[in-house]
Image (cartoon, rainbow, N blue to C red; front, side):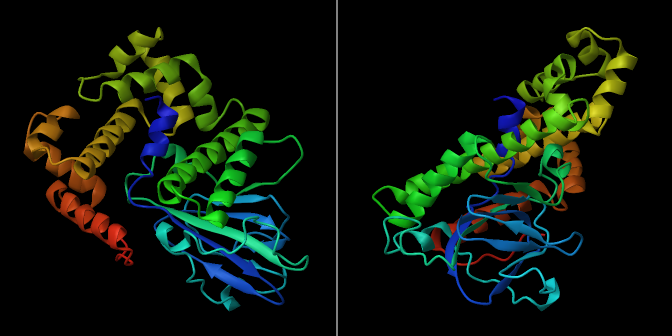
Length: 329
C-alpha cells in the first residue's frame, strides 16, 4: 500500500455512520463533538455551516464539508442562530438504518425548492491511531461545487446519493465502499488545493518530495526493520542532517518518532483484524519482546494491547447488531 492508502486505512476503526435528511422552514441542528471525522453533502437547496471559531459559511447544492477532527458544529437555515442554541442532532444512524428508507428514486425529485436535502455521515477514529496527515488538517474543509472542480469527488457524491436514495440490491455492500471512496476523494481534493496554494509545506510537500516520500514508503513497507536515521538517509540519497531536517519540516515529526507511531498504528490494525498472538504482532512491527511492545502500545493508546483487542471485538459486535456502542476513550 502507498502512504496515502495507509492514511485511509487508519480510519477503519469501526463501521461508518450515514443519514439522509430533508429540512424545511426554520431549522437547525448541532453535531458533535465525536471521536471521529464527519462530513456533510448538500444534495439540494442550501444552508449555513456554523462553528464556534469562524463566521458562518453559506453552503449551496453540491457543496461538501469535511470535519476531520469531529469538532462541534451546526447546520441551519439561517446564519444568525448561535451554535449553542441549536438542538443536538441524533438522526445519524448506522449504515443499515438508511437502506431502503427513501421513497424516491431521484435524490432531488421530491424535494420542494425551498427545502434542503442533506447527506450527513461520520467515520469513527481510534484515539492515537489517526494518521499525522489527518491531524494536520484544518478543523473544517469546505469544498464548493464549482464547475469543473474535483470531478471525481462529484461522481462519488452522486453514486453515494443514488445508493442511499434508491436502496437497490447490494446497497449494504456498496455503502461502506462508497463511503471509503468519498473519503479518498475528499482528501485528494484537499491535497490538490494545497498543491496550488502551499506546495512546499506540510504533507502535500511530504508526499510529493522524492526523498521524504521514499523514506515514508520504506517505513510503511517494512516497519519491522531496525531503521536508523542514517540508514533511511542513505536509502534516499541525502545526508543524515539534511534528511532529518527535511522530513521533520514536512511531516511534523522526526523520522524515528514517525516510525514509532507507524509501528504501533500497524499493530493496532493487526489486533483488530486477526487473533495472532501478541508476540507475533510485536515482531511484525519491530519489537523484540512482548513486554516492550505492550509498554509502548499502552503509552500511545492508553490501554494494553490485549484490552484494546477485546474492546474492538465488542465494538464490532455492536456494529453488527446496529446498537449504539459506548464511545472509545
